[in-house]
Length: 198
Image 1 (spheres, rainbow, N blue to C red):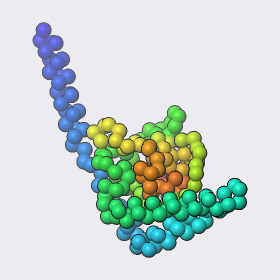
Image 2: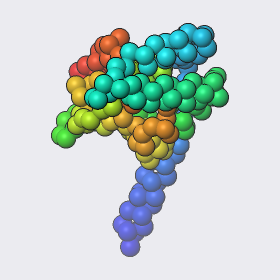
Image 3: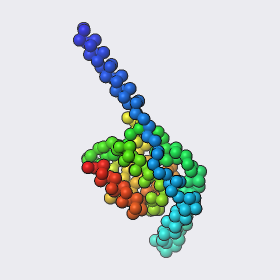
Image 4: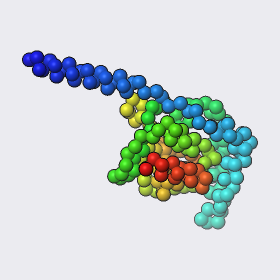
């Protein structure tokens, strides 16, 4: 009888301790350099439209593809002007206290440090990091944002670390365009992922 009571007390003590340690985690603070601190409104507009004008004609030789991307760029610019300087407009657009990454299908699984998390978010929250591109790919990494050990947002990285897909995708989160990284952002992400994998 005494042993059973001791086991119950010990179990309850462990549960209380684990619960309190989970809630002690601080929410991540977006203290990294934001895109709105790096670029003026005009620089953003010029860059985003120049990306759009690099889109060539469609398969039939017409320009409906470019027209589509021009219209989509206008939506993105309106979105940027609407949420400028609002931290809750940055991915994952909700509070989280942990960021994990897992190589798929069977590979490493790690929790990113605050510094690694900041670098990752600086890349993916910058609309200048991405080109317009329709993409199909196999996911190579699954990234989860956790709050009190529960998933609050997730995304995948694939196509040799060059494409990022949010779940759900456009238009819920426009800053990533359709998810293909430009070369400089790709190099930054590749360097970060290599560091995480070590």
